Amino acid sequence: MTGVLGTTGLTAYFGMLELGRPKPGDIVVVSGAAGATGSVAGQLAKIAGATVIGITGGPDKAQWLTDVAKFDATIDYKSEDVEQRIATLAPRGVDVFYDNVAGPILEAGIANIAQRGRVVLCGGISSGYSNEATRYGPKNLSTITVRSASMHGFIVTDFSDRFSEATERLSTWIRNGEITWLDDIQHGTIENAVDALNRLFDGKNFGKQLLEVAAPSAPGSPNSTAANGEAAQVERSHVGR
Image (tube, rainbow, N blue to C red; front, top):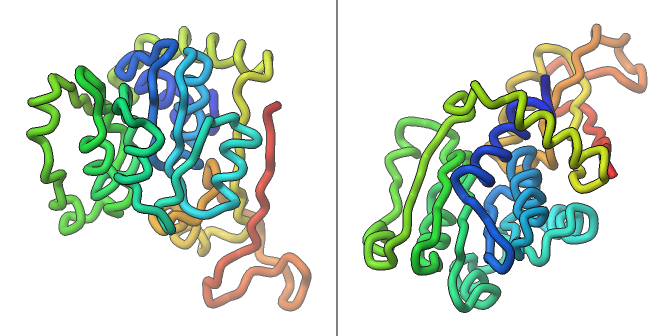
C-alpha cells in the first residue's frame, strides 16, 4: 500500500509521534516537508498542537504547505539561508527537528536545536544514498551534547507490531479532514522508472512519487512516451481534505 496508510504515512507517524513527541507550544521543523513522509509528519505535529515550519524547495511547494497542509511557516532552501531562517523563525530554538534530507540542512537544524530538543533522523535524500555522498556528516554534533539534546535514527519496521494501531489513528484523522496529501504521478512505461525515481533525489517530486505504467502508445499520440526515455507527463493529484 502506498500513501498515508502505507509505509510513508507509518514512517511519519512513528518518527514524529513516538520519537519526536511534539506537544502544545513546541516548535517543530521538518525538512523535505513537501515529500510524502515530511508533509504527513508536519501535519501530525500540528495535530499534536505544535508550531510547524517546513523546509522545502520552491514557491509552489511552500504555498501548498501553508495553504493546504496548514504549516505555520516555510523555508525555501533554494533561495534562503536555512540556518539563519530557522533562527529567525524559532529564536528560542527548535524542540523537534524531523530530518529527511541530511547534509547541510541537518547541520542547520542541529545548530538551532533547543535545550533538550529531539532530532529525528528519518532519511538522507539529499545524498542520493551513494557511498561518496553519505560520507558527509554534520560537523556540529557537539551541539547535541552541550544542549542535552538527543538524536535518534529509525526505520519503520522497528514498529511493525504496531502498524494496525497507527493505521487506525491515521484513518480517523483522514476521515476528519485533518490530514491531506499529494500524489505526484508520472505516466509512462517501465523504461521511465529510473527517471521517476531520480525525481526524488533531484527534489522535483511534489508529494508521493508514483509511476503509472501503461502499454506504450502509438508514436505521435497525445499520451505517447518518448522512446529515448525523456521525462513522461506528470500529473499532480490532490486527495484528502
